[in-house]
Image (cartoon, rainbow, N blue to C red; front, side, top):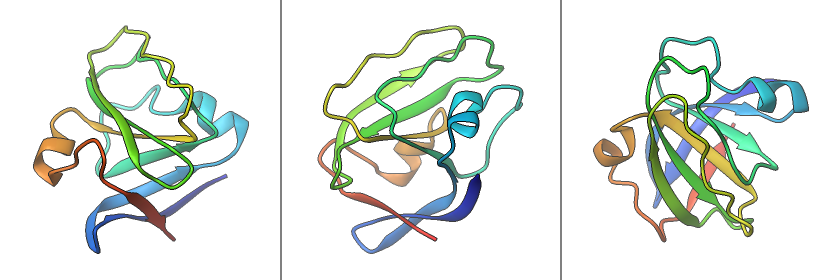
Length: 112
C-alpha cells in the first residue's frame, strides 16, 4: 500500500511524499510515470534501478535512523549502487535534492 505524507528534515518540510511499503509498490517504484511531484520513499530497500524509466532521478539511501548515507543522481536505464547499511530509499526527480538542500548526513523522516 502506498500512503501519502511529508518528507521532513531539521524541522523543515522538504516535499510531499508517497510511502511504498508493500513488495508490489516497492517493485514498481516510479516505473511507468513521466515524473513525480515530491518524493517516493521505498521501505526495506538497499538499491534501485532506472531501467525503463522516462526521467532521471535523485536517490538518497537512508539508514534506520533516517540519516542520509549516500546521494546518487541516476539517469534512465542505470543500475544504482547497493548500500549495505541502507534501510530505505528516497527517490525524487533529478535536481530536487539540490533545491531542497538535502545532503549526506542530514536526518530525514516521513510524517504521515
